[in-house]
Figure (cartoon, rainbow, N blue to C red):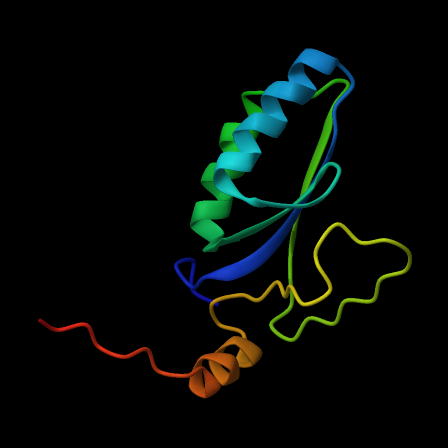
Length: 115
């Protein structure tokens, strides 16, 4: 797969120091979507993910912290138990997801507002 092809990524972290944890969380909220505590969804190419991981590397202590990025498959199946943090009708889709393409095709067209 080409380095510039957008994909979904799951980023999870375990940060030992509260100040670094807060800084890393604030940084990630600006670049990815929170899914759970310490888990984020990032949409981007492998090159963009590499740059994001480089940015994260400069914000952690590699001797005591752990940050991981997992590339998500194109056809993702998610099973959950218990109370989720997303509303029941919310979906996480990647830009290349067939489900997203199908939803967009079925979406009603908005009326044009030409004056």
